[in-house]
Image (cartoon, rainbow, N blue to C red; front, side, top):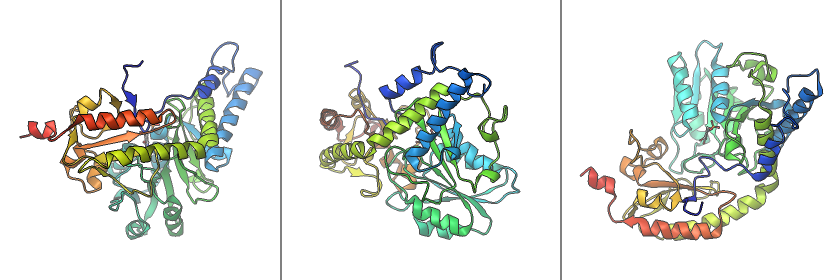
Length: 386
Ligand SMILES: Cc1ncc(COP(=O)(O)O)c(C=O)c1O
């Protein structure tokens, strides 16, 4: 274990919290809560149903929603697909607004809708990586029926002002979907107050298991939303399939733990982030991408200038995410960084470090040492490209 690089990729996924593992295991074996939640005729099913509904309340509790507004899915990708396709289906065209810096789970879905005759506007972020109400207002059209904007950007850690953007959408009469996969558990979300119609969540970004997520559906959106997976009519007909009790219970527990820890964990991670930033920003030519103020503490996108880390050397010490696709077949620069105005070369000289529940102060110090030790005056891919 000690030879593994330090984990600095919590934005990609998180390990499952021990408390969550315990809760999940209790739903698996013959002496556990293994029944089918749809088997209402016996106690095995009834107990599983109780656990599922308890988890629904836990997920709702973290985000200020009602339990009845939470629909289980397989993750934020499916939630985004259900929200966007589910609202578009049954309409004869119309205009959809989203942004250039959304996750591919939104971008690829709206592009699919574009192929089916819908018109699309992709808002550009401002220099801070934020979507402004001015940009949104300017893009709204009479036939705009749907807007989809993320709460927290997965590469930059920047936070859109969703309550303000939601107000603009509501006044216009359109529906707003928010991809909150990177926001839940990291900052307060209050769906009782925010005029948001649909919101996507994922368990594995919040120390829960992979393969489970949820879509918040407000009453206003419910009659307009069409199921994308048909079968036994589960989840009020919105998403069929036997409910995965252990996954759902895991997500519920993960969100409940996140709610308990939210304030303390955020404060601790902000402190660690500052320690990291103070050191890394003292390296000549390094800059932080995206707003310095309107951001979560957990995710940092750093572009290197004069001296650039040797990414493969750094990867021996740190598990981070690189938008330099040096090892990938496509060698494509990040669409988020390009939208922010970075040159492709600068986008490739960028690394994302994301901190989380198990990041310690000594990990930060080791990360700083590793970054400094890996710096070289010319990036190897620049040499390779001549
Ligand atoms: C902003 C955002 N949306 C959606 C997803 C997809 O989530 P899932 O892995 O649960 O499908 C991710 C995960 O990387 C994400 O960061």
